[in-house]
Length: 210
Image (cartoon, rainbow, N blue to C red; front, side, top):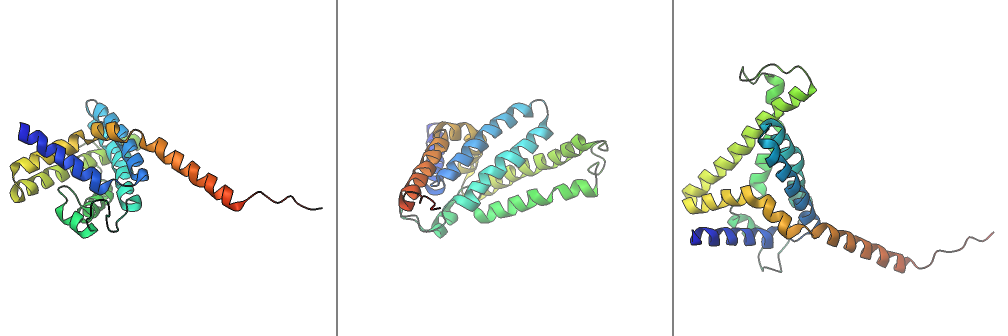
């Protein structure tokens, strides 16, 4: 158990120090973590809607932080290139994330093709039921993506690494809330400081002459 917890700590630390430099990314992870916790609660009553929350809010905000705001140039803090970090990434690196998010984005076409999901579910009668059908597909995509990567890691890096990563992914929302809860305030403060600097650079506004 001690080795397992130490491996979990290392995976979390590597994930934080390599992939969460941006305050915007950290803030989006905080939002994602809160919505994931809500999805966990909804899961007990309505797994399909929990998947809708988890993908449409949690995963979308989380991955937007990585795709659009996290720097991809040389990491001078950790003395590591982006190529090196992508190669050693335990979970989903950018290439794997693009594949996973593409599958997620395309998966509603399955509901369009077969609204009953090939007879597994009743035919949807309203908008909410259509959304719930998509949620069931997204639930399968999420569970499938988790199982697939765990299997890969078990085969390539050992069973413990796979199980540790699965534990990390499932518990990440709670961990992210604990370490990133200050990030939105720090981001707003930085934006405010930049605005004040810009105002000082512009100097006092000129008084119109009539």
